Image (cartoon, rainbow, N blue to C red; front, side):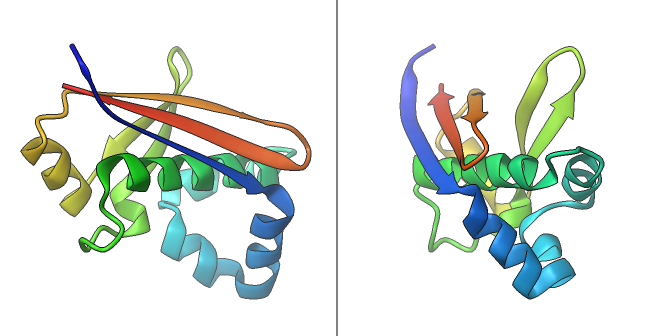
Length: 125
């Protein structure tokens, strides 16, 4: 297994909070899947959870180099599995691009504090 690409992103949590305040459900539904919205909304630090997922999606966009290739935000889903922690599930065009690039594994690391969220993604073949 070799590393094919990496992507990283850091975001100010206040920026995501502002987007949620200004655009509400429209922003949430454009960027996050229903499962992601449900997961984050149930957390005491919902903004932090949304921010980390936003950062993870941005990191995937960078690693796949797919910003202008028709990939929607919801084609990249940050799923949470109790025994594994957060994982990346690709759908639609994002999944097609990963398959074309022969990506067999995607590794994700999330972190943050009250003010910032960070994500690091490693794509492997």
